[in-house]
Image (cartoon, rainbow, N blue to C red; front, side):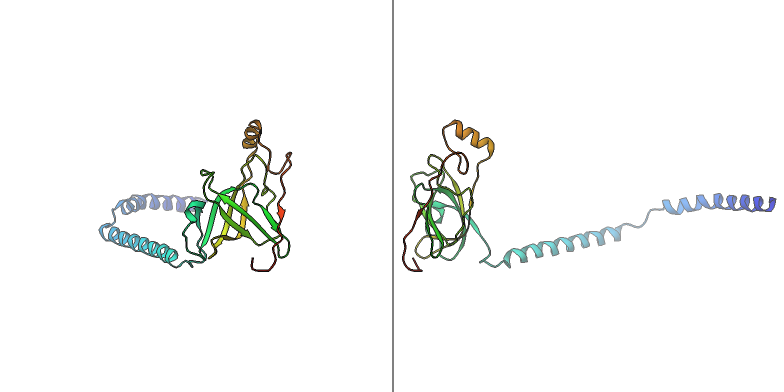
Length: 199
């Protein structure tokens, strides 16, 4: 056992003698000038590649897929066949439905311009959102996405109706307004009697 103890002591002494030499090597400063230049050039190249990728992505977008969000008054004079997202309030009394083929037609007007010119919207679908109702005494905010036709109306592919929050509804009801999809009785749409497919 004493031989083993002697070997351990000898190994411990050698390791302690080598420790200051290792610490001195670890503390030596590395030459940095070449590494800093390489790192800066690498960072610059990386940033240029990322910037070029973002630029290529933006310029390479298919213009048919881009959607421009506009207010009703901004749509006037826009070129036809351009994807648009138009926001406004439903004009009361304009919501009508055709059964064959299914289509909803209505008009929207700028929220802040109640006397402004309305935009006719045609939505070729049988179902609309539950919140999309013409409620007497309440403004219903509508967003319609689609393309402007050469006749000047919007051929909508999607429509969204903003549902007021519970807090907004409490304030509106206190002011005498009705809920668009609850307690109050909404005025349902009229049925269109339009003949022909293209009208």
